[in-house]
Image 1: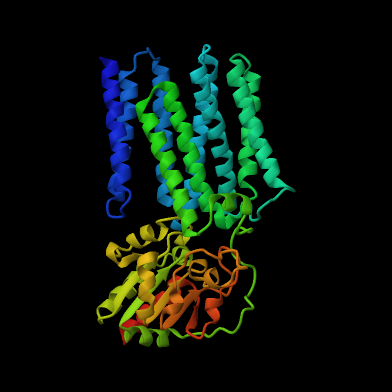
Image 2 (image 1 turned 60 degrees about the vertical axis):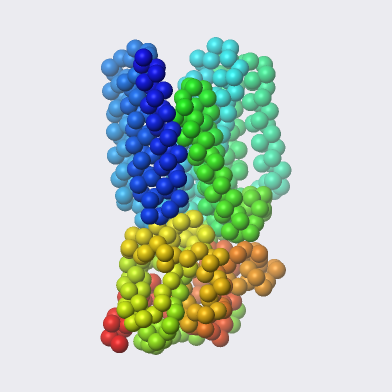
Length: 461
């Protein structure tokens, strides 16, 4: 009876995972989907604690509940306090913890296999994939927070990485074929090699590509969790792992398509060699400034304004001010839309979530493919903290590292206004010829301060 009830709990959890993931595909329903999936996970955990078949000491229950409480409080506080600009780092950190958990499960279960080759495959897969995901995610976290601010490339690193991968796979295959169940030393050797490979896999990749790598590592964690599902015959764990793995893989593909680059080029090409950001003033030509008062008049008498949000908007936490400007312009009959690049803010959906915080209507967030044809009929484009996603070199300069990447074609508008702190390069570390166009004017300064001044000027007109 208990086993049947446990399977029902796992079935409920699996259904909520699928339904929750479906709802997360739309900003309007994403929060509800997240809560539904979390509710399903709660059902699975409670079902496991209540309907298991084996006797468990009260001490074990106490340890489990204490761990759940500690993880819940820690995760809740971390997620509540993290700034939107730190979201890629948080994703990397949480993903690494998932990989570590999968690896620990494998280490614990390895001595209990009792000559079960199928179980051994699941254990070793969870160990290798989980460990690679953990160490790789920690390196990615360090790169994103600036601790590792340069890509490190060993001589012939592609050959070294490939050789290390083959050694890890070969050792795991040998352990399965030989049935070496009692050689714990081999398990720890495999663990160490997988950990080293995870580091070598990520460390040469430039910061500009780190979100793609995080997404790929996320799919690895899902596969490691699915291996645990096979090991325990746990349907909820299996379903959750498959969903995370497939979603991470699809997201990786979407991001690569958004940059018009194959995944192999991201991994082996090390685009964006630094961790992002240039180091000095550009030398591409002459720029012209615009005063806030002049910009307010220009926008006030426009028919159509398109706002391009970027990472700088998130850093300055200026999403509420930009929404205020939007409402002021609309009250004067100006049509206002937001142009959203797939990787604006360095993660897919980053800008959508940021603007949703300030109650921007979802139908005003227009994807790149839909907004590009509208720029030719746009009076003013206001770019706030975006750089590489509006860089025309992606279309015109074959020598540019971002050549071929789809961009927001803002240069077609009548007037282009760029709000930046300085002339430093963007995340890819390259110059942007848009800044020197005769159509472009620069509004220098912190996004929140500059936009607040613009809002005040609009109110005074």
